[in-house]
Image (cartoon, rainbow, N blue to C red; front, side, top):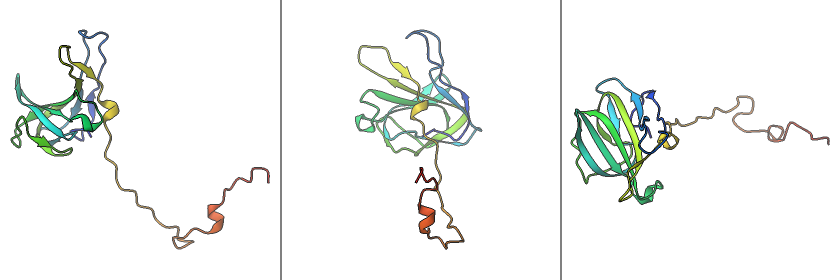
Length: 156
């Protein structure tokens, strides 16, 4: 799930080579001070400051379906609950508050090789609301036999 409900400000842009320029995160717009949640369940491998922003990296583990070497990182956090390396978090758990722009990255880490960033967009699902069906007042909520049959006769 996305770490915030904000719109995408800057999408992921695949670099043309391993060390070439690109935009290796998805950046979400969000008002300052809003909650940031964990997009995946897993164990925190890093929680700290990089330059002047707070980052949290999460290893979802091999049972997540992402693979054993995946790390998901959320950046742009400001004050919030104290999360520490080694802590287990659940998807949707509050990690902190926004600094205005939230960065989400996903990368594969294989020992002895540079990290390979991948586009996290296909893995994001938007929150869905429960569908509520309203019965047809003519049938009192029950379908008649004619409503179940196909309206096309197929030449019969």
